[in-house]
Amino acid sequence: MVEGMVCKTRGCRRCCLETEMMLTEGDVARLESQGFRKDEFCFESQGWLMLRNVEEHCVFLSGDVCTAYENRPDGCRHYPFVWDEEYENVVRDIDCPYHNEFRITKQEEGNLRRAVKALYREREERLLRS
Ligand code: SF4
Image 1 (cartoon, protein in one colour):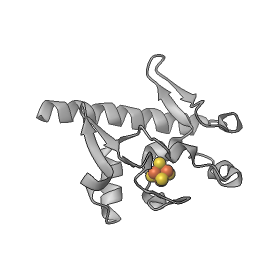
Image 2 (tube, protein in one colour):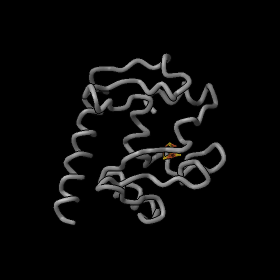
Image 3 (cartoon, protein in one colour):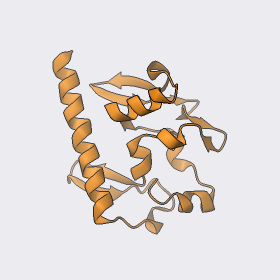
């Protein structure tokens, strides 16, 4: 989440429910360094590394608390900004009930574009290896 205050003030955890989030190798390494086991929080689908859900929420969500907050995936840090594959652009996810309260900066947009490039590059490499 880019502006965690909005989420906190609103008591919103919408983005942690029924996630469809891809993970970078860096995300996985950070989470493993916190002691989480890769196969417990991640699965592979069509070359993507995906964040696991349990009972329709992110595996790291416990009550209202993200147990991986310090090491949370890049996708969580960027949310509600997401990549629009069709238009190859950064957009606000309208599934976030407060998406209109977020403003993107050039720096944030650049960071998200780099993260998306890394995701695609890593997927290509994974598919080539398999
Ligand atoms: S890692 Fe944390 S912030 Fe990200 S979806 Fe899971 S519970 Fe939410």
